Image 1: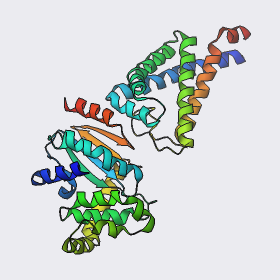
Image 2: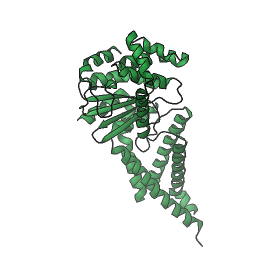
Image 3: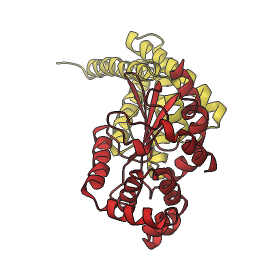
Image 4: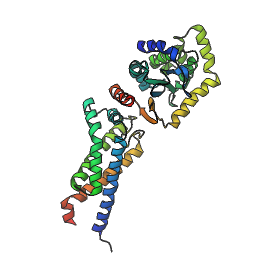
Length: 195
Length: 146
């Protein structure tokens, strides 16, 4: 988690969006040879595992060295009662450059808010009072809600039916990887694609 | 009037070609992509240790290719049909286990994006039934009985 936060701080100056990626939800250089889009649901346990265990390794080994451009996408599943609300808050926070902090907090406290429904409590903890007010307003903004919906539609168009799903793109090649992934295999795959 | 043994032989021939083509196609979908993708599919079943996942991911597609070509060519029929049946039996068992446990994973049968479902179970079950019939037909005892 700390590594993830440090990496974010280091990368903030070079955050940039590709044509269809939210700059607030993307990390690394958009010119990196490999792009990984992560479709996830804040209420999904496997997504928590991916966010907290695998993505920090990808950040350390590939995003920070400029080899991979990492894009986060929302894919709240209908069976999860609060995941759409969580996605709206996270997307709103991205407008203030606080996506990673809010995503970290949502996954960290997933066990609590998925039961008691107090999604906002997890989000508010990592925001200043001024930011919190802005995020609450932005989360109800039609542009934020439509951005979440665009991610969902993009996922459906890519035939995604479960979370997490990573879509790895290298030139014209696209590889959708669903579910939990062994990091040694992912590393071998990425190294092969980067050759 | 066409005898039943001729019909059975015609069915076996069609099955042999079709099953061989399926095996070749299954091998091709794996060999055309980085081997790690198939390794991830195998790993998702959570039945093999990591070293075995690597071995199977590197060798199974080639075995499928050999079996498929042998079936299509009609060479080493008893061995290739029995090997196809054994493989399909293992695949089907693993898929049923994963489905029963509610694991939402790719079956790994024909590359990525083929999640285990009732449809994939019916498909693989049908292939298994066909392969078992072909194996039965390929043994000498069966041919003598005709």
